Length: 182
Image 1: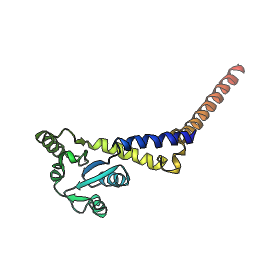
Image 2: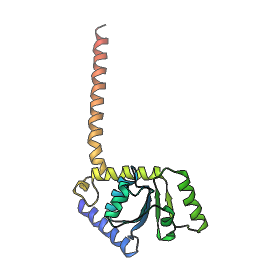
Image 3: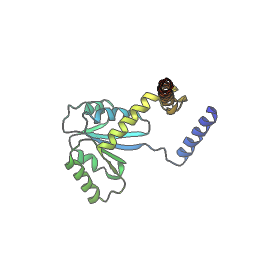
Image 4: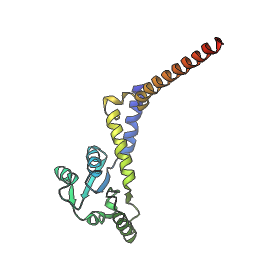
């Protein structure tokens, strides 16, 4: 069974490569602090992602330093990265500053850029949590992936359910025993 899944996965990847669907997703990250840095670390580790640039007003932010260590362009001017236009697939804004999102939207409209997606901070936090789960439970390339996520969760749910069923049966038995003494 596992061999047929692996064969199917290999074939899907082959088809995707043949049809140029395996191009890297080109991303710029705006905000290299508390939220941006862990997300950047995870994106840098993803083989299907190309970080094109990272912007933050503070050159000392850990995400700026991390980007520089990986040879990624850094800047204090997020708009200079956004002006790369269609060369960027996703702009991840984790600043939480409404003016940044507003300026990005305005640039996209003025430049008639219908390709680039501006990703909201909340979605970035969601992705970070998903990445955390992938790291915890494994990926298709790691040994942990030989069992699906449900294989890790199901035993806990099953144990919990069995425990609750046992508790309910015990309580019901006690009630029945108590009622039979009357």
